[in-house]
Length: 285
Ligand code: AMP
Image 1: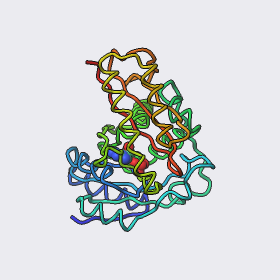
Image 2 (image 1 turned 180 degrees about the vertical axis):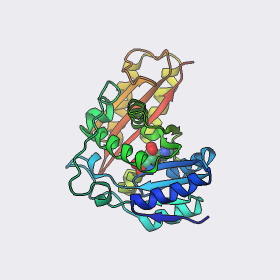
Image 3 (image 1 turned 90 degrees about the horizontal axis):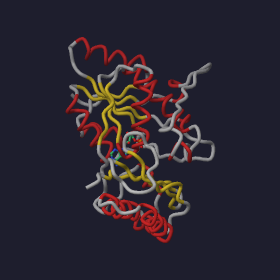
């Protein structure tokens, strides 16, 4: 089966209805396009869970603040379609802003709670409301059996798990591991913003997270480790650091002394035009 692209909810639903009539399982991989191998790895995981894979491509305006990069965000649909076709994806759903938010649209989705209001929730007010709004719509439009989200956006994955459960959305949410470049930089559509010099600096984030993770897993005090990590990130050329924090892997509660349960270290920092985020799992030895 070759890739089909649809632009309307009606066409998406008609395709899914045909698959359902054949008794097939359906997976959805929501993206904002400018696809890279990290996104493609999500489609491979989707394939392990379903007979038919849908990738949505939509740069969602409601999750960007006015001062953020909504206008500049790369839009590369023809190249994305080529990658999806090569990966064996059956359906690309690429709606317009008007299709998603037609005239008269008046509904907000608001997420709350300790997991939402920290990290990117604190640094980007309203961001997760926009994510929840668009992901809720995408899940209800496609009504897949499962949907795949990357741990690259670990907090987003946790917030999506939370509101899907809270709203009883009957879709299994599956997390996928982070895909990295050979030098350790987490793949991201926003890496395209980096100049060659910045691209050479960018793997510092992964290196700092890796160093702290190794020591924290052996029980080292986090205070001095994080202070040194901040220094290394700033002196590499990142500015500012939005956060460099260790949190409980399940609740996202802050851990400030030592790691004694599964945790996660999170970073967000700006490098030139790009705001990069990354995270590592810390499993106490
Ligand atoms: P985005 O297009 O950036 O909104 O990302 C779409 C999905 O791909 C999200 O679930 C991301 O977490 C996931 N993703 C982005 N980058 C990576 C990566 N390097 N490895 C794994 N998943 C990723």
